[in-house]
Length: 480
Image 1: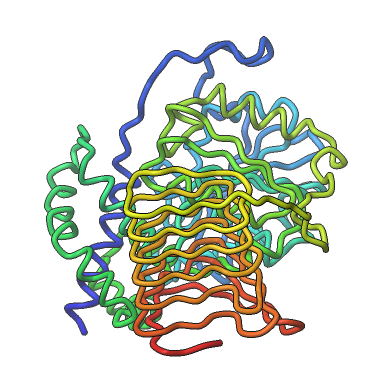
Image 2: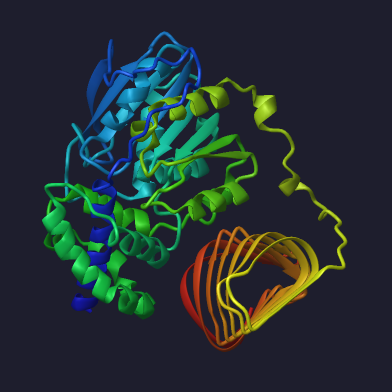
C-alpha cells in the first residue's frame, strides 16, 4: 500500500512540476484597443497591504488592495507557484482604474504563512475566500481565478453563490478525474524541453512517471487511501511532501469532485483558455462551457497555461469587454436551458466500416462505426450511435435514443445522451467528461468487464434526483 501511495504521489508531483516549469511562448501582440497600453508595467502601485490572521487556517494571509475608491470588487485568486498574487501584476494597473482589486496570497504561497499542518483543499480555500470577501470586498464582487485558483473559485461560487456577481476562470486546472488529468500532464510534458534550474529534478521524476503512469492508472481505486493518508494525516503528509506547499495544494486539487459545482452556479461566467495549454487541456474548457448555463468561452491562440503573462493585452481586452457587458447581455436565455429538446430531422446516415482517420459533424438519423480507428465526431446530433470494435473521439455530441459501445475505446466530452437506456457498453474502455445521461428507464447497462473514467458527469432516471459520476470504475454485468 505504501508503494502504491508513493507512486501515485510521484504522478501528482509530476503534474505539479509541470505547472511550475511551463515554457512561455512569445510573439508580438496585435493591436487590440487604443485604451490598452502597448506595454503593461508589472507592478502593484498605490496599494494597501495587509497581513491578517485567519482563525480556521491558523495562518497569516497576505492581502493586497488597489483601486479602493471603485464600487465593484475583483477578487483575484492565483494558481500554483511561488509568485502567488504576483501572477496578476501585468493586469492590475489597468484593472484598478475601474475596479477595487483584492489580491490574496493563498496560505502556503507567496507572503502568506506556510504550514504542513493545514489541508490546502479547494473546500478550505473556498471558506477563506468567503472570509476575505466579507471583510474586504464591496457589495458587488466578481471573482477571477487562474489555474488552481480558477478551480477554487468555482468551488467558492458553488458553495457561496450569494457572494458573487460573476465568475472568471482562466485555464482552470484539476477539473477532470484525477487519473485523466495527471496522465494528460505526464504525456505532454515528457515531449517538452524546458530551460529551468529544476530541469534535472523534473527529468528524474518524469522518467519514473513515464514508466509507471499507465500501470498506476489501471490500478485505479487501489489508491483511495491517498486521501486519508496524505490529506488527513499530518505525519504521513510531512513524510511524503515535506514542507512543499504546492504539493499539498496539488494533492487537494486533483482529488476534488467538481460535478455539482459545474452545474450549480447560474450566474455569468467567462472562461478564458490558452489554446496550447499543456497543463489544463482545452477539453476542460469545453466541459465547463457545456455545463455552466450562462458561460462564454474565449480561446487565445498560440498561448499556453498563463495567458495573463504570455498574452497580457489579449487577456485584458477579453476581460474588459466581458466586464463591461450588462447583466442582461450576459444572461440571455441559453438554449441549453430549454425544457423541450429542439426538434431536428435528418435522414442522413453514417456507415463507417473498416477505415480510419475520419471526421464527421452535423445531424444524422443513425451512426454506425464498426472496425474503425481514430474516428472523430464533433458537433454531432443523432438519433442513435453504434460503436463496435473501434476507437472514437466524441466532442459536443447529442444522442436522442442512446449510444451502444461494444469492444471499443471511446473518449467523450460535453455529450448529452437521452433514451430509455442512454448508454449500453460491452467490454469497452470509456473516458467520459462533462457529459449527461437522461433515462426514462435504466440509465446504463454494462455487459462483460468495462473500464470507465468518469469526469464530472451525471445521470438522471425519470423523476429521480440527478446522480453524479466522477472517478475510475470497473463495471461488470450490471445496470443502474
